[in-house]
Image 1 (cartoon, rainbow, N blue to C red):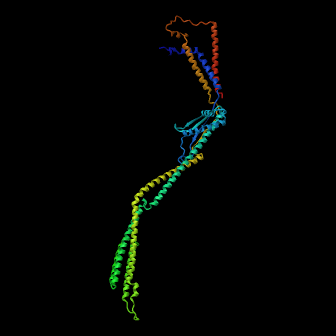
Image 2 (cartoon, helix red, strand yellow; image 1 turned 90 degrees about the vertical axis):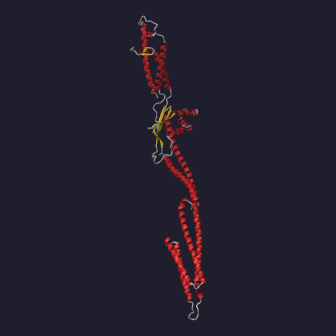
Length: 524
C-alpha cells in the first residue's frame, strides 16, 4: 500500500498543491475583484438604523381571586388586533407626515404605508413555558438613528394607549351587556312574581301549602257540624217535650204533678247529656255551656210552674170579702212560660238549621278545595320552576355584573392587566444594515470559490505535462530519460522580477483586503 494519500485520479495532496500554486492568480484575481466590487457597493449603500423596545405584559395589581378579569382575550390575539389598528392607513400616514418619512411629498400614499409596514417588526417574547407569552418587542428601521428612536417611541405609545383604551372599552362593553341582560332578567323575574301572585290570589285556599290547613279546618267544620246536629236534635227533643207539656197543661190544668214529673225527667235527661258532653269536651265548650243553660232554664221553669200552681190554689176571698181573681196571675202562669220557652226553642231550632246549612256549605267548599289541590299543585310546580329559573338567572347575572363592574373600575384606575415598557427605545449607535463585514467576507468567499472553479476547469482542460506523474498518466508513452530544466541568465532574471512583482502584489492584496474591510465595516 502506498504511503501517500491518493485522491481522485491517483493524485496526491502535493500534486493538488502544485496545481494551486501554478493557478494561483486564477484564484486570487476573481476573489479580489469580487471582493472589491462588493466592498465598493456596500460602501455607498445607505445605512439603516434600527431602534427596539421591549414591552412587558403586567398582570392586574389586585389578585384574581378577589377580582376576576372580565376581558380574557389572550395576548397573541390582542396583539394581532392592536397591530391591525395601529397599522391602519390613517395612523401610519399620520406618523409619516409627523416625522417626514420617505420623502412624503408627491408620492403614492399606499406605497408609503406598505413600505413603513415592512420597516416595522413585532416579535413575541415567551416566558418560561413554551406556550406562555410574557411580552413583545417593537422595532423600526430608518436611515437616521434619531428618527428610528422617535418612531419606535411613538409606536410604543400607540400600543400602550390603544391597549389601555381597548381593555377599558371591552370591560365597559361587557359590563353594559351584563346590565342589559340583568334588566331583562329583572323584568322576567317580576313577570314570574306577578304570575305567582295572581295565581295565589285566584286560587286562594286551593294551594298545596294550604292543604294541611284545609284539612284541619275541614275537620273543625265537621266537628262543629256534628255538634250543631246534636244541638239540633236536642232542641227538637226539647221542642217535642215543651209541646207535650204545654198540651198537657191546656188539656188538664189540674195535672201539675204530672207536669212537674215530666220536668224532672227532662232535667235528669239533660244532666245525663251534660255528663256525656263534659267527658268529651272542656267546660267552655259551646255544647257544655248550652246544656247547662238548658238545665238552668228547665229548673227555673219547674220553679215557676210550682210557684204558679201555688198561686192558683191560694185563690180565696180577701179580708174585706173580696175574692182574688185568677187573672191577676196570668202573666206568671205556667202556660205563658211554656209558650215563651217553646218560642225560644223554635228560634234555636231555626238557628241550628241555618248553622248546619252554613257548615255544610263550608264543608263542601273545603272538600272542593281539597279535590282541586293536586291540580293546583301541578300548576304551582310549573310556576315555581319557572320562577326559580328566573331567580337563579337573575342572581347569576347580578353576581357577574357586580364582578364585571369591579373589573371595569380596575381598568379605569389602570390597575388591571396592561402593557409596561421594560426597555425604552434606545438610540442605535451603529446601523444594522448593510453589514459591510459580512458582505466583504461573503464576496471574498464567493470569489475564492469562483476562482477555484475556474482554476480547476483550466487545469482539467489543459493538456500540458508538468511533472513525472503527469507523464506516467499516459501509459502509451515510455520515458527514455529525464532532462532537468536549464535556464539562461535572462530567463532567470525574468523569473526573479516576476517573483518579486507577484510577491508585492500578494502582500498588497493581503494587506489591503483586511484593512479596507475593517475600515469599511466600522463606517457609520
